[in-house]
Length: 265
Image 1 (cartoon, rainbow, N blue to C red):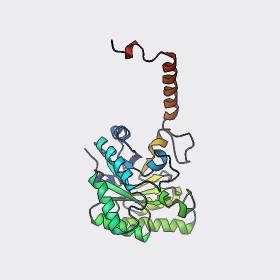
Image 2: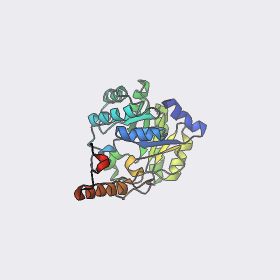
Image 3: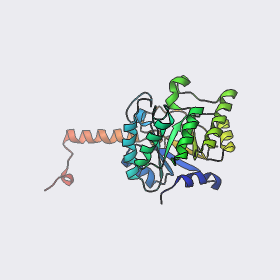
Image 4: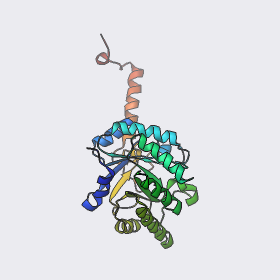
């Protein structure tokens, strides 16, 4: 049975923590779904972990739609949500509505928007009014990396923390079904989680959120070993893959592969 936005929202009152992970293709999403993950995000983080870019800013709507389609086709149980990429909603409410609708047409159940400014809240309210479920995203927002002066923890100063808390309340009022809290102090994440009725999903926000999300490549140890402080690799697949590839190359060069069991007679 496919989880719905209503199911995800209700998990907070039921005291059930939300499990979430990013996925960008069919095989990854299929594995995440089979493992019982609640929420799969087709993240614009594909720019950095799949495309090798320095930031998420160059990721396009066409690319996000392409990856969303692959993920949707793999999933039977989890709720699939897609990131709205840079400049796909910032210009106007009309642009936001047009682009968000494309994700739902591809099979996503919801979209995620970064930011809690008055303009962002206006976009969220319009999408929700149109029947498009939205997750808000506050704290460290990667699409604003230049405005923030780099990838740094947000909300350490009192005024900044108060602003982020105010954004959370405004986004809840606008109708988000959940909030992603990224790169903020644990104390602030706890305050927000207690202040809003919708569930909070954290990444680098401590244990007091109502759920957690990690990037696929970080969770599985598919990177180069240099992970952010908040990441816990649950496997080290890059090592396993490199070992397998080296063994394959050695066997090909030595004539051991293909052997009799891999050969037609």
